[in-house]
Amino acid sequence: MAAQKINEAHEHIAKAEKCLKTSMTKWKPDYDSAASEYAKAAVCFKNAKQYEQAKDAYLKEAENHTENKTLFHAAKAIEQAGMMMKEQKKMPEAIQYIEKACMMYMENGTPDTAAMALDRAGKLIEPINLEKAVDLYQKAAGVFENEDRLRQAVELLGKASRLLVRLRRLDEAAVALLKEKNMYKEIENFPMCFKKTTAQVLIHLHRGDYVAADKCVRESYSLPGYSGSEDCIAMETLLQGYDEQDEDQVYRVCNSPLLKYMDNDYAKLAISLRVPGGGAKKKKAAAAAPQAGAGGAPAGADDEDDYEGGLC
Image 1 (cartoon, rainbow, N blue to C red):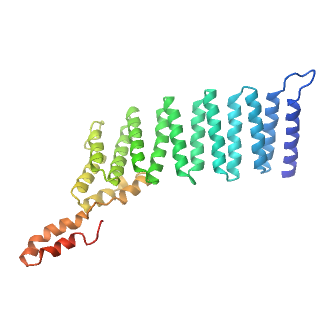
Image 2: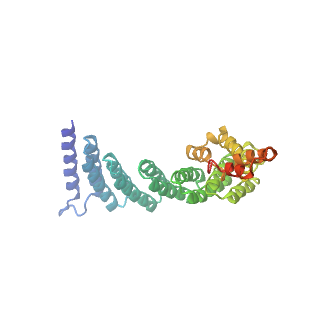
């Protein structure tokens, strides 16, 4: 079966080369027919699992479409060449071809197709290179945003934000989340704005920036329905606990269903959040101080106990 397909592929290549020849009666190469034959050859090679030869055939198809000024079809062929590299587990090369195809889609005036291809490329590279996936998702979001397709853009921004958190690039994640939240506000999806505020607070507290976290909540009061909502109360309680170094209060909020069932990357931020200085022990020590004084225990013993466990 494979040998038969390979023979078929070579027959199509021979036909393609014939289409490109000129003579006294045929002055111009027939690029359209040649592209069609190379496409058929590529499919035959692909079915025979000869992915390198399939890639070459797709690139030949793209060359002929380009000569014929049919850029959309050329881009499609180059994208298929990228998929052949993916079949060979050559992901960086696959992504290069897909990015090249996206440039041609843009040049052809079909930006939506470019953005969707960038999204597909991001999904391909994400398991092995998070940084590149962030770049591709952000590019795709930018294309959709330029086309005023904000719902598609914000979804891709969300993917990029989550990966930035996973990479611990929290400063960039904070910027990306603000953009994401503003976009949800623009399309009037206020419940998602609430969720993004929660994510912002978690990121800023992990950055050690209580002021920025508090500012995110205060700015969200202007969102319809936020003040007094479950999300709002949870964040106010979290910030109060963090500010007062009440570890128990912070733990309760961070392990509540509201936060535990967020997107996984944000849920991990919640359950790993710690109060600086071990606040729970401080409270207990302060409450026990009068009794200790009555018993004549040395004050220094309590002071040492405050930080016995180090940072919680």
